[in-house]
Image (tube, rainbow, N blue to C red; front, side):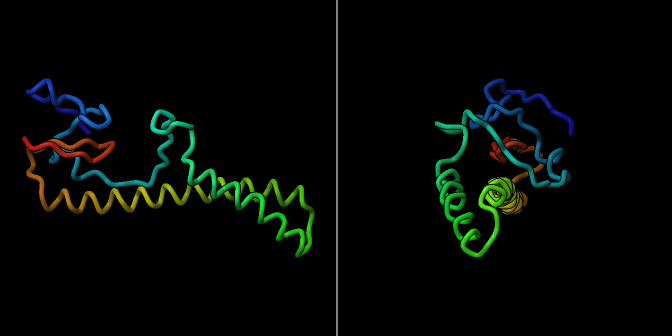
Length: 127
C-alpha cells in the first residue's frame, strides 16, 4: 500500500486513532485479514472487564465441573486457562473481522476513489 500525503495538513492523520490516512482507491483492493488488536491504552486496565469477568467465571466453574465428572483438578485448571485465553482471543478476532467486512461493504457503497480512509479503524473522510 502506498501512503499518499494529504494536501490539508489537518487530515494527515486519522482524527480517531492518529493512523495515516490513505486514498480509498489505494486501500480498496487490499484483503481484510483477521487480527488481534491488543492496545493497553484503550482500556483502563489492560484487558476488557467483561472478558475478564467471563474468563474468571469459566476458570472457576469449569474445573469444578470436570473434577466432578472425573480427572485431575490441577491439570484441568491449566488446560482450561490456556484454552479460554485462546478462545477469547479467537472470538474477539472473529467479531472484529466480521465488523470490518461489514464496514468495508458500507464504505464501498458510499465512498468515491478520492476520499480518505484510515486502514486501522476504517474511519472515512470526504475529499
